[in-house]
Length: 225
Image (cartoon, rainbow, N blue to C red):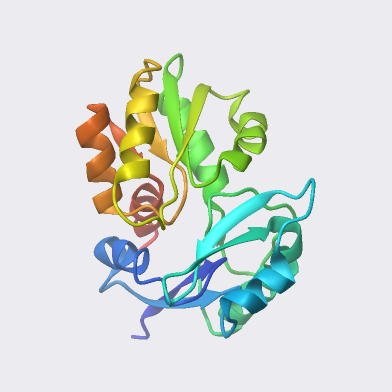
């Protein structure tokens, strides 16, 4: 029997050695995991030259296999991301997961099930946390305005920024304390780059339930196998 294939598309570079193991933990043994990335084969300078945000762009961040982070424009990377979806579908992947919690419009596959985290996370958490206050940790403060548009009609949300790619715990600790001081009921780590060690730091300093977006997504995807 041929093993099923799960496709993971990052807006950074593949393989994602931080996120990949989380999916392996929940899906491993039941599907072959294949990864592809928007920035595959590019240097940091090349990625910045091609995809740096301009005024008014929806801002995203991801990482290279070197560990360097890159800030990008959603509008500029979207066509490349769409191409990567087609590549994984042609390789036999089904479903295919976009490893980014940002919102994209118009992404599509021909037949494979396309899983976009923003849709799943918002619908799931708005149901779980009805009438509660959600703290949201994001990589970049510039993302707050866009997130307020996306979360505002669903839950009472407040925000703090901490890069998942920064060295040390300083940013995470500050964000955890900042949200705890705003009387939130739970905290969402709203980027695929946050890992289980990041969650542990926030839990320790906020003393609140913390939801790791990639782990929640991986658990949901695992139900397809």
